[in-house]
Length: 381
Image (cartoon, rainbow, N blue to C red; front, side):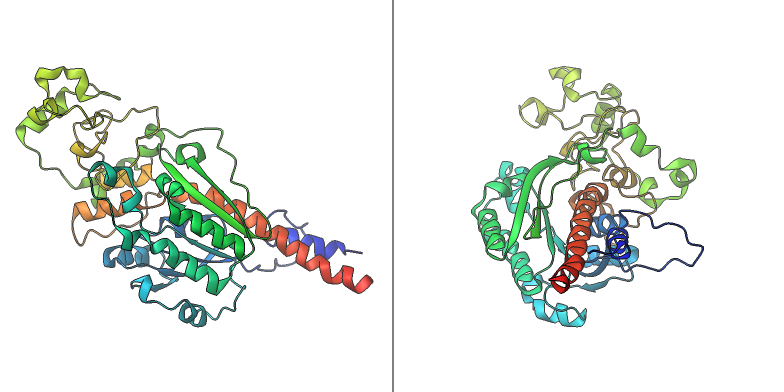
């Protein structure tokens, strides 16, 4: 018979239930472990930490992203190199992990070759970068983690590489769940459709339930506060615009207005000659989610990135808040404003990750409880 203490331990290990108060000092429970591949500036790692994971390692090739990552996650061991030249067994050895011991392997392989903007601009055929999906698979084969999480752009779902990835995961014994979800439905103040894959060993991991409330631009930007608005360099960096552009911005109606509201004659010549990209030089709306935050989020010619009421683009700090980063998260400005914006736009929204990582944690807790109950059953027989 399964003992009550064993059942309590299996449920409390991942915080599913609180143990009764005994007056004694609580025992510290080891958090489930995770590795972040293609970590960027750390959005995925932050979401995993917020969900209760202990991120033990990360791999990232971009020096500016590594600098930002280390400024926020100093205790995580980082491999600042091209993953194609990194043996997975070396990472496993340095982290003192055995095959099958890692709880979660997570990552977002670079996806520019599959993105909508890349297609619109005609820059297709980045096969070398797109094949990084298979580097992720290589690490899965070596580590054999208990769970897998992969996030990417929606167009990857129809690509042969993704079909191959799913097939290989299934051959390794994983139950694969994947879908295209909107981060705005999961506590992120932004409209951002993403492909997410969750895979568990011999059991499927469901997605998190959509949030009851979609946070708005207003709710996100008020987190800056008056003091930070004066002292945060990510918020105070100015803009340089031509007089024609400054005039255009001033004319665009507040709170969700667009350049199309001005009529053809008041628009810039380049816009009169082009019928596409209707969101450029548009304002965000206070009480709606923002559009997808991209690397061009501080440039009005790249999308609907104007502040709802002020005659400027959203700031770097505002863009980070719309990505669900906390106002204290640090981003390196060593290479200037636009590389920092690229980092922010490429990041995974931590809140989106947190909610789905919670589901992974529940799956791991269930598996732990199951494994603890087996020896007792076998012994009884």
